[in-house]
Image 1 (spheres, rainbow, N blue to C red):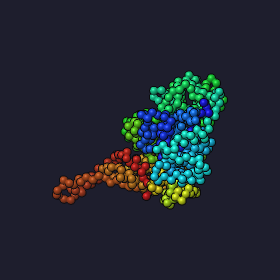
Image 2 (image 1 turned 135 degrees about the horizontal axis):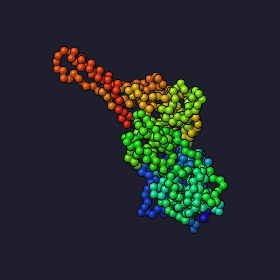
Image 3 (image 1 turned 45 degrees about the vertical axis):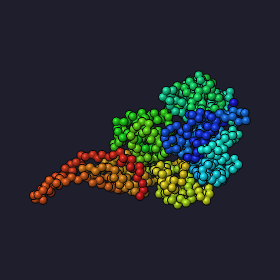
Image 4 (image 1 turned 180 degrees about the vertical axis):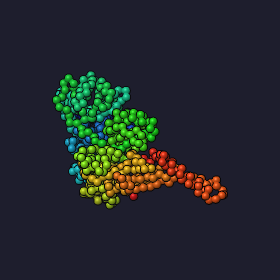
Length: 598
C-alpha cells in the first residue's frame, strides 16, 4: 500500500560510513541471506572495493515490520566524492527522505554541507545521524553540536549509531518509517515514471532504473519516453532485493527497474519521463540538469594498433556510465585517440583506470584542461577544449575561463598552509566560518583549471590528509591566458602543450622541459627542448648526445689524424640531426601531469 512505502537515500561526505550502514540495514531487514552476505554489499565494482569509495549509486528494496505493519523501504546508497555529485542529485529526486551521516570522529566535512544543501533544496525530510560511535576517539556530542549550529537541527532528533557494530541501527529504520512521509501520487492517473539511472546488460539490453510517481507499470505495457519520443513494450519490471527480482507490477511510489528490449543506451535519457503510449500523461516530470563535462584530456592507446580496442572499450563503458563524453582526435606525436570530457579530476582518473583494467589496454593520458571561451578580434566566439585549438595571439580579443566557488574544511592549525596554496593557485579568499576551536571552513573562489591540476592532492598534502573540499561552478571570467607550446627538436608536440595564466607560463614551461629532459633518452645528436609562447622561447633544456670515442683505435701518429676523425663525426651528426626523429617515451607524456611549481 502506498502509505507503507518509504523512499530514502543515504548521503554523507566520502568515507563517513554510508556503505557500512547500508550493509547493516540489509542484514537487519534480512534482505540478503547470511551465506550470501559480504561487506560493502552494494559496492560491486572492484575499484569501489579497493579505494573504499562508492562510485555508482545503488538502489535496493527492503521489507521491515513495525507494530504489525510491513513497510517497503526503497533505499539508494550514494557516492560521497564531489566529482560524483550528479549521482547524489539523481538519487534525491527519487526520494522523500535522506539519512544524513556525520562521522563522530571527523565531524562535518565539505560534502556533508553540499549534500545537505541538495537535500533541502529538493524538500526532503532529513534523518540526521552521527555514526562510528564505536571508535575510541569518537566525539559524538561535539559532532551533534556542529550539526545543531551548522544545520539548525534539534540535537534530540540526531541519532547516535555505529554501522560497524550495528548499535542503534534499528532506530534508523524506525526514524525513517516515522519521519519520512509516504510518496504522494495518483494511483489511478496516467503513468508517469522518472528515469534516474540505467546500465547495459549484454544479454537483455538496457536496464532502466525508475521511480513511479503516478499510475502503474507492468509487463506488456506499451510505453513512450516523453523526452526522446521512443516507443517500446515492457518485457519485465521488478525491484532490487538487492539482486534484480521480477514482480507483477510497479505501483505508485515504488522504485525498481524496467526492461523493454532497448538495444541502444543512447535511446534512454536520464531524467526522462516514461508514460503509457495509449493513455499518455499531459506533462512530463521535472528532469535533471544535464551533467556538463568540466575537465578534458586526451586518451591514446600506448600501441597505435590498439585504437579499435580503445574505441570498443569506450563504447562499452559509456553504455554503463554515460556521464562522460568522448570523440575521436589525432595527434602528430601520439597518433589516433580520443578527446574525453569528465565531471572532475577523480572522475577522469576512475574512467582511465576502468578502461585499463576491464580491457587490458595501456593508455597514455595528456595533461588535463578545461573549456575556455575565446572572443576573436573579428567578433567570432569559440569554445576551446584543447590547447591546439587556441588561435594565434594576434587573433584573440579576450579569453574567458571557468571559475568555481570552493569550500575547504580543515583543522585551524593548517589554515596558513592552505592560504599559501590558494595564493599559488590564483585563488581569491572570501571568508572563514568556524565550526569549533579546531575546525574551520575557508570559502574561496578560484579558476577551475587550477583546481583540476592536482589541487586536491596538494591540499591533502599541506593539511596532512585532514582537509576536505567541495566546489560549485560560478561562471566565466576574463583572464590573461596564453598557450605554452613544447617543442622537441624544434618541432611542436601538440599533446604536450598547455594553456595557463601568462604570469605562470615561464615556471610551467621551465618545469615541463626539465622533466622531459629526464624522461627522453639520449640520441646520437643533441635534442633541444623548448617552451614557447607565440614566437618567443621562454625556457630551454638540451639533451646532450651520446658520445662515441671515434679515436679509440688511434694509438699513435700525428694529432691531425684524431682531429680529422672528430671533424668527420661532427659532420655525420649534423646530417643525422637534419633527418633524425626523436623518440618520446609514453612516460614523458605522463610525467607532464606530475610537474609542479618550484
